[in-house]
Length: 66
Image (cartoon, rainbow, N blue to C red; front, side, top):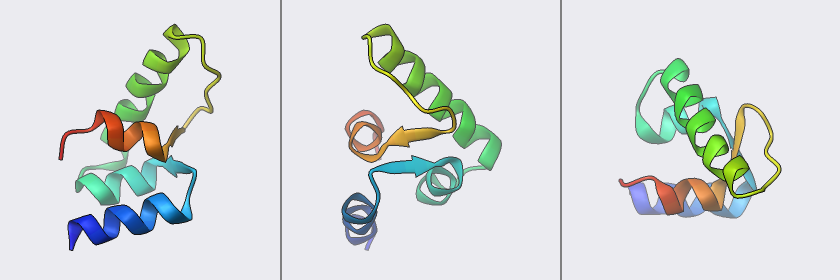
């Protein structure tokens, strides 16, 4: 079931919001924002442009161990 949900998110959205991350990981919204901020900081260090409060769906699933 979790794999099906993951695939549906990946197909529907290019970016995840804190609400999406919160739902996927079963965490609070504030913790989701913290995770997004950390992932975006990593992207900025590698020279990528980021959007505050959102994270690339592909990058999220590549870097989160579930």
